[in-house]
Structures are given as structure tokens and as C-alpha cells.
Length: 446
Image (cartoon, rainbow, N blue to C red; front, side, top):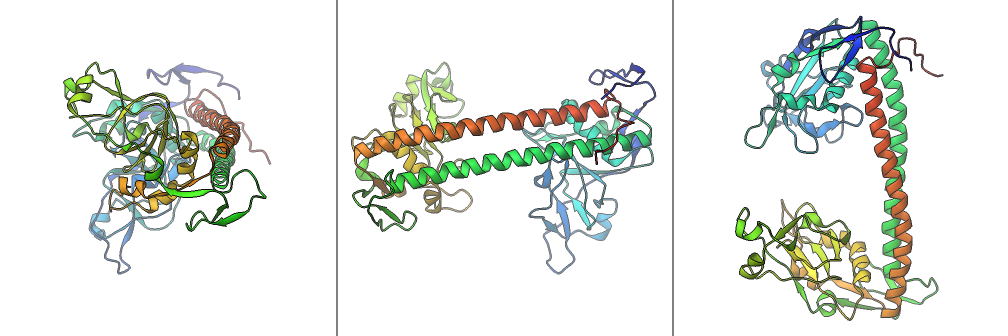
């Protein structure tokens, strides 16, 4: 795309030069509505409840509100005045956020049904000065450049956007017809990019599913398709090779244990520590070569932390990473949420890793507890493992190592392409709404 014929200084650092005919004004000057959301009351379930959008409904890849698993709340009609989310309105996250997605994201509503949004959000509508789609892309660009961070008022660990100051910031707006042209150009181009992203995401999902099914098939049936089979007596396993054993984990591993967490923030346990200390967040369903934290020798001695050696298998017993695995390539201590299966002469560590990878779903099904389900060590002790002869274990490991390495390489390449497409999409949006390219003569391809 070509550049504009004439530019001027914007006076705004992140914007740089701007087309000379664009007008500077605060964002609030282009708004016809600006109001906080409301969370209302518990739903009555009598037909009077209203959809209340949450930040969880943000489909930020497409910069619009999603529509899955919608939440209904009871909101008084008087409380709803000015707080409805209508088709074309923009909703801004003003409270919450985190390190990965800081507060300040904005998305557009493309729904006709009656709705509002939670009190963690703010709803705006445009007046005659701005096209709502253009403004949505502009706010996305402001977020991409991290400008939203300038308006943070963080309290009690929660990020809060000072919405009044945020909407008072200066921005540049082309004439309304030009805004419409830019929005149409971006809708067309980002739509094509999103289609490519969806296609590649599907390829990644298919490869991951194939990888899991390949591992499961191999650790339950082996490499000989003609081998005679017998019932395993375990529902999820079905038939297994006739000469394979099924035994409890406790029979295979003499050294099964866990760890503990030394008092958080205590210098004597952590400062200048040089002993690896593994948490469930370090588990990646792969080989563990490092830990995110270390503890001191004093912590090891005073807390009775046990050092587990290279080749041990670690299983997360609870938390967000429940049933995640790690095969140690280092010596390390662990926290209390990790169950460690030490090295055994009865089973090859890498084969055990592949088996428990295939069994993750079954372990989770055996978890107990409500809000935070956990897999007890007793559950792992009594879990049945399929055990081929050592020679077959070695052959299975070699086969799966070769196959999964190729699959992982394909996934890695696709993920790299997805990152590049996401960056390209950001660049396209930023260039258009900051006037770096002139799209006034653009026409959609038929």
C-alpha cells in the first residue's frame, strides 16, 4: 500500500507522523455513550434475566465479544439505563487483567439481543465523529503499543484502568468516510488472516490428537500388529498384548515420594539457593532440564527435602497442572504437589513417561475433591500399568521418540507460523489506523 502524500507531527510519541488532514481530539469527544457495567443480582430464572458479558467472553483474536457459555443475571430496569450493550458498542476491560493480558483490552459487540456487561467492564458508543469499527481497531492499536499501561491504578494486586483518563487521551481521527474505508480494509484483510490462523490452529490440534493416539496405541498394543491379544481387565486399556503384565505402580517403583514447600519469602530457604526445587508449574509433559526456583542446603536439611535423581518421573497431583508430567534430566527436590516415581529396574523411565502420558485422562478421572481436585499418592500407588518385557520397552521408546520428534517439529513450525501471522495482523492494523498506509482507493477483491 502507498503512503499518504503529506504528513505532520502528531505530537504523540507512539504515533509519530500522521496524515496532515487528520484531526486531533480526545477519544471521549467521539463518544455518544460512556458508562460502567453492572453485575446485577443472582438470576431469577423466570424469563426476566439478561445476558451479562464478562471478560471471559472476550474473543480478542477477532476483537469482538464471544457468545459461548453466556452468563445471565437479574438487573433492575432502572439500573440498566445507559448500561445496555447494543450491536456495535465497544466494551473495554477496566478491572482485572494480568501479566499476559494486562487490563485495557477492547472488543466490539456484534449481537442484536438485549445484554449488559459486568462492573469490571465499561461500554462506549460512537457519535457522528467516529466509525465504531474504526475506533475498535484504534483501541486495539493503543493496547498493542502498551499505552493502556499509562492509565493503570493498581490496588490490592488487581489492575484497574483509570477509564476517565484513558478516554481523555488524545488521538487522531480521519474524516468519517475515510474511517469507514479503513475499517472495511481491515475487516477484509484481518478476516483472511484469521482464516489462515484457524486453519493452522486446526492442523496443530490434529497433530496433537494424533500424537496422543499414537502413544496410547503403542503403549497398549506394542509394535507388532499381529501379536495375540488378551483382555487387560481395565476398561480404558481394552485388549493388550498377550504376554504383557499389568501391575500396580507401587510394585514397579520402590522409591515413590513427594516434597514440601519451605516458608515462602524466608531468605534462609531461598536466598542464593543452589539446589533445584521443582514445582508443578515447571512440568511440561516433557524432559525437565531446569527448575524455576532453587532452595538452599539449609532448606533441604531442615525441611527434610529429598533429592530425586535423573530419570525419575514426576506427576502433578493437584492444581491447574493436575496430571502433567516431567521426566527428570536433572537432580531436584520437589514441592508437595509433585509425586515422584524414582528409577526402577522393572520399567524404563521413558516408557513409564509415555504410559502415564497416555493415562493422564484416567488419572484425572480418579481425582477427588471439588474446587481443586487432587490425585492422591494412594491413587498413583494403585494405578495399573501395562508392562512389556524390557526389550520391547526399549523398542517402543525408540519408536515413539522418533515419531514424536517429527510430530513436535511439525507442531513447532506451525506455531511459529501462527506467531508470525499474529504479528502481521497487528502490524496491518497499526499501520492503517496510524495513517502509515493510504487505503482510500482500496477495493475488495472479488
